[in-house]
Each structure stands twice: as C-alpha cells, then as structure tokens.
Length: 540
Image (cartoon, rainbow, N blue to C red):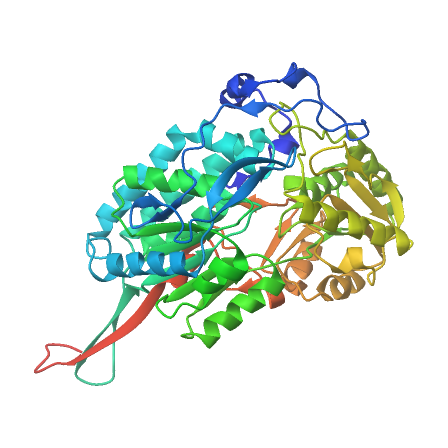
C-alpha cells in the first residue's frame, strides 16, 4: 500500500484536484475574485474579504444514545471562524451531567445492545458504509473543517478527507481479523486466549486535526467492538457531529458512538474521572495529558493512551540534497500553520551547509502564500484562536529578546483574524525557549551543528520524543541516527508520511501507547486466558 503523504503543499500541482477546484469556485459569495488574489505574507492584510462557505450547519447539539440533544444545563458556547474571530454557531456546552448521560448510553449499548454481539463482519460492513458516506459528503466536510479550523481547503479536501476514509477502510478490514490463540501448556490442558473488547472507551481529541483525530480514536475502538464517548475540542466541534450523523445513517446502533462538546475542566475532567469508563484515550498537550492521567488513576485506574506534545529535531547532514531538505524542512514546520505535534521545530543543519540552507529557507518562507484558506493556492491560514495567536507572538518576542536572529516574519498579518507571518530564526541556541518549548505555530528555528555525535546528544536533550527527520545520502549515517534518536517515528529524507498502517506515538513525555496500525488495536482489547483440563487427549 502506497503511503499517503500530506503533501499538497510540496507538489504544488493542483491539476489533479479538479474536485477541490470546482468546489472552491462554488463555495460561497463575497469571494472578490478569490482564487486570483493570492497574498504573500508581506502584504498589509491577509484577508481583504473572506469567502463565506455555503455549507449548512445542522448539528450543534450533543449526540447521546443516537439522538441529538441539548445540554442538561441548556448552556451553549460559541465556535469561531479563525479567519475573522466571528462566531460561526452556538454549540451545546456539555458538563458532568451530559457525560453521565453519554456514559450510561454507551454502557447500555455495550452490555445489552447488538454492537459487541453482532458478527465482526457486520461491524466491518457498517464501518465501510460509513466511509462511503463520508466520501460522498467530502466537499461539505472539507468546507466545514476549514471554516471551523482555518486550515487550507485544498489540504482538507485533497489530503485529510481521503486519509479519513482510508483509515476507516483500514479498521473495517481489521474488524473480522481480531482473534486469540491456542497455547501449548505443560500438562493435559487446553489453553486459549480470547481478545475481548475493553468496554466503554472515553476519548478526547484536539483541535488541530479534528477529523483525522476522530478516525485515529474511533476507528480502532469500534473495530474491536467497544462503545465510545468522544469529547471534541471546544474550538472545533462541528465536523465530528456531522460525521456522527453519517455513522447512524450507515447503521450504527444507538449508544455505540456518543459525542459531547464542551471544555476540558468540565466535560473532559468528568470523562477522565468517570468510574464507569473502562478505557481513556487523549491527544493534546503534555501538561494536560498529565492531568488526564492523574484523573484516570484517581478514579478507577482505567488504562490510558496518550499522544502528546513534541519538539521534533530535523537533522540536515552535510551531504544532504540541500534544495530538497529546505523544502521538506519548510513543510515539516509550517504545515497546518505549524499546529502539528510532530512539527520539525528544531532544524539542525551541519555547519558546512548552514549558510546556504539558511538563505534558501528564508527565501522559501518569503514565498509562502498566506490568506483566506478557501482561496486556491493558499498555503497558510490563520492560527486556531486568539489564545494560540498570542502564545505564538510571545514566543517570537522571546526569540528576539534571547538574541536569536529574526531572518523574516515575526508579525501579525492583517487587522482581523489570527494570521501570523511565516517566521524564521537563525543563530538559535539550545537553551532558548524557542528551541525548548512546543510553540505550535509558524516559527522555524535553525540551529548549527558540527558532527553526528554532537547532534545526537542535542536532539535527544528534550523531554519530548515524538518524531524526527534525517536528511543524508549516507545509509550508514541514516542507520546510526535512526537508532540513536529517542523518538517514536524517524522519517529519512522525507517528513510527515502518514499511513493507516504506520504506528504513531512517542517516547518520554510525548505519550503512552501507539495510534494507527495493528498496534492501535491493543489499546482497545483485553486479553483473557482460558484453561480447561483434558481427559485422555490424543495429543498435547
């Protein structure tokens, strides 16, 4: 199976995206000739007049026990368009009582409902029907994802929706292939293992990849026969509710998948500490992950999977193809507005090619197209919200104050929304905050190194261990680095290659467990040993 690359930005070939092109022209009004007015980051305003997507927002309530319902409290909260900071819709605000209702529905569906008792093949067929429905509605979903999140529409439509569908095809394929073993034992015993669904799974997803994180969490949980309560990020609740409706159209029984929108300290904490939740999965910051882990331990000691932060090294050796490495490093950092847990946010470049790499990286950043993400050819949209926007600007100021050299960018773009210029720092030192902390924004830090031993030590000198990139033409250098780097994924002469079958997760404080691939199924299964004596066996 060919790996799916989130790389529309690298190919720059939009001829194969006719579906996206046609939809961009029909998305909405007030486009002002949209696709023809691209804005480089040095322009005065990132967005002159935004495109208003013509997609209906029909689902803003919680989904509990197969029905869309208001919050028990009747409260709602606004979800925003990051291009303007304006409200898109009011969404039901969940709290502990809504989590209780969702858990009760999931528990009943698991203990009494048809889902864990139906054949694995029938579960497979429902997952496949769901994937087909998502594919049918991909234009609307891509528009909604971009509207609520700010990522380029071409990225949503050309890369993330196909990957979402692929993930559910993958997990549908696993549904009827999960089985135990017959185990030889010392003595006259028949021994077998059963792989059983763990039960009710609580899942908390982030705002940077709402649909993809939905697939990473929900896909393996349902394939294994579990029921789910999913808490969406408060910034991006809309697409999860939309696809949940499609799941029920595909034949998913009520209560198997429940969606609650709300905030971490209320709904999230209630889910993490709930005594009737059997398993918890969380993707988000390392600091929040610690809280989630503590709440799970203090309640019923439920097992927890964590996919957390990163400060990934991107290592460019002296023999690397510089032009290729520059483009890959640009992609590794600026993809998704820099809002990516595995972003290559520490770019280590060998001193022999440092100056050339720096100059080309600066030129590439200056060419980056920033603007309304609904416009064709735009590479970078806004940050997710004002909190993240201000956080990134604080880190930029910190870099300047620490005497790193600001090569380009560093400012807000425009007067509305949360747009930031693509920013490049040189002469960055390991002890600077921009080299230590997860910025989660369009800020590239380029550091210099002398030899392999030095860069290994510096690359590993972090609390994180999510991913790394290595660029070299020497297979021995590549082999040395791939084994020495304390990270969960090493990309060699490439970056951000994601595939349904490739496991993803981190070392150290970047998480616990693995998402995707066969390894993700282990998160949602219990292993039971069954032993019975044999009388007069023909063989043992």
